[in-house]
Length: 167
Image (cartoon, rainbow, N blue to C red; front, side, top):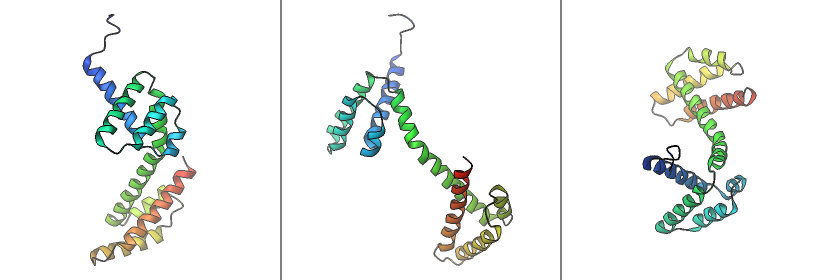
């Protein structure tokens, strides 16, 4: 064995774990999402078979089989396709967090509406101030968070719209 071909046992285990993770991601996909992923037919059949199993031991053995199949092929393109499939949801999550952050900022600071309107010119700062006041009053009165949610929906709509127009 050449020095260049040597891979430590730890590194091999790490690679196998990564392949198993990719296999587990494939099993979690819906049939429609799975159909969009390019992969060898044998691997596709193994993934579909795993989705049918309900017993833990059967799923575990099938996952090992999927991992073994993946060792014999280049899993990089499959992992890239999975990442691309999850990318929109990651972006959505980031935009939701941004809307939550702005809602908290609006409730904590009266000048936040102006800053928001500066960053998102399509926003109506007066409407944001009104919703913020109502949400704040509703929080102090221990009422259900109707205006609090409405404020989030308004902020989220503005942020989503802005993200679509300025990718």
